[in-house]
Image 1 (cartoon, rainbow, N blue to C red):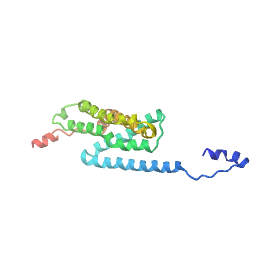
Image 2: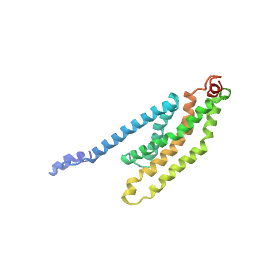
Image 3: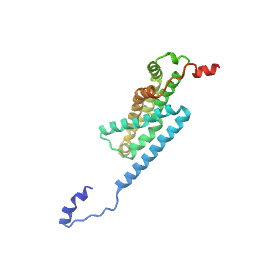
Image 4: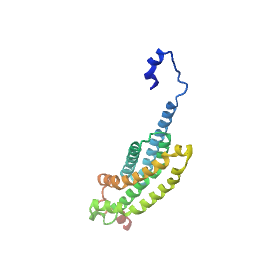
Length: 208
């Protein structure tokens, strides 16, 4: 595109050019392919969560994925990074890890909502207690994963420059996953989930 802007000037002095290779086109195809697989992965996660947690819980967890990616991309944009194959590979690499915190939070919320005394308690109180209950172990587990990425940041030479987006974007995405799990997941649970009617909790069914 830059060269096309100088076509008239080049022709005046008798200079022409011919494009023999276009790596930009190949890069765009690779990025589109990665985006395609990224969407497929999100769909697979959503379908699996329907059977594991329930339909509404699946919607909540599935929503966290694009929210986390949006936050990570925004931070990458602020830091001057570009979207390339390695950046998207970092997202694919961490995709399975991004939903861990949200799944843990939503599962504990589900457990609290179906406790035998849930109908006696306020919804906000249940959500705060359920989220706070698993905060420390979830933070430690996420920190352990982040620390495994730190050595990659010290790789030198050409390989270090090539791999740089991975040790940068994966920790950022994991920290964003905690932010989303602790804020958006309880908020969406408040809007979408309901406490079972009195006398219809899991504990009551087991006692019968």
